[in-house]
Image 1: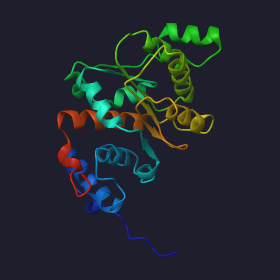
Image 2 (image 1 turned 120 degrees about the vertical axis):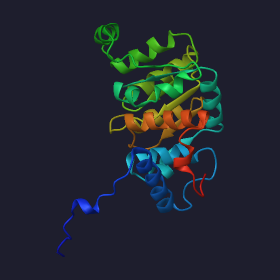
Image 3 (image 1 turned 60 degrees about the horizontal axis):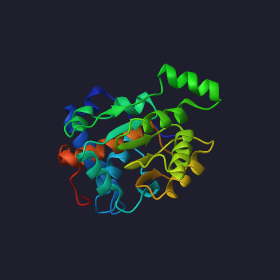
Image 4 (image 1 turned 90 degrees about the horizontal axis):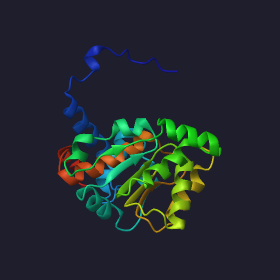
Length: 228
């Protein structure tokens, strides 16, 4: 094994927050080459890769036809975003969302959700879907952790009791993760889905933020390159 060069503070670049983000996008754009599609999906894919440092998302992210355009229109008209975890909720840029009258919500910690989930023997995430549907307003569901939330969404869509503006289906894990994502692809609802096992609350938030930044034109300078 070769001796490794000792790392010192001199090897660390002193950059501001936006400079770090801009350089990160420059690096990932260069390393991705021509793999990122040159259309409205580019900013979303790049922000997910930036968040995860995982280039597999270039191939794994599935976009239903017109999903980005429909999502932007919904956000422009004040759609709310409902997440399945407080982590995803905390990662969403509320300031950008509020510009068009939107809000972000997560019900996973609500007492009534916990009580109902316990009495019914189901997960809190599935009960949260029912509670969100009762809001009676245009919604985008951003699911980064719980396959049961996607399953419940599928059930309610089949029942005709909800019709989301967009479903972001990116739960991570092993049990029912892949199957629940595939169910969403069959609904006909606009969706952005990370096929396979990969995903996470950070990915869900990254997709939401990419859409919001596309809508208000902010952060554009960080993703500019030959693929945008």
